[in-house]
Length: 144
Image 1 (tube, helix red, strand yellow):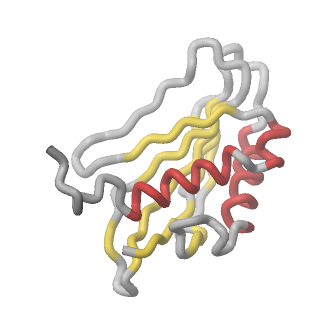
Image 2: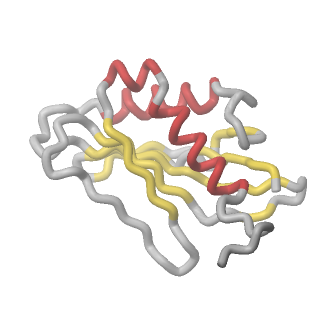
């Protein structure tokens, strides 16, 4: 039996969900025709995601660090974005997709439910890795 006061979805989970919904609903990313994948890295466990076998568009993957408490009473999670090209390899718009996702995240301000702030992680690096493109990402802060 679940206890009535047991919170199954905390602020960190809510912030991840709302951030994914923000990106999935962004008109700029919609025009680029990307698919989304998200993975949460748990302490001591490496995360992974699979590109759908029939993917015909770039996949924007969000990889989340474990949440950590910050001194100001917020919970910080780092989300790293990566773009994986479709299996047919025809599209190579990784950098364009990352820029659009970054604009969407930073342009959201305080309008994302459950998210106190989104900022650029330091150091902020963008690299080509194999056929994909990866960035070190953004810090997403939620209230405890």
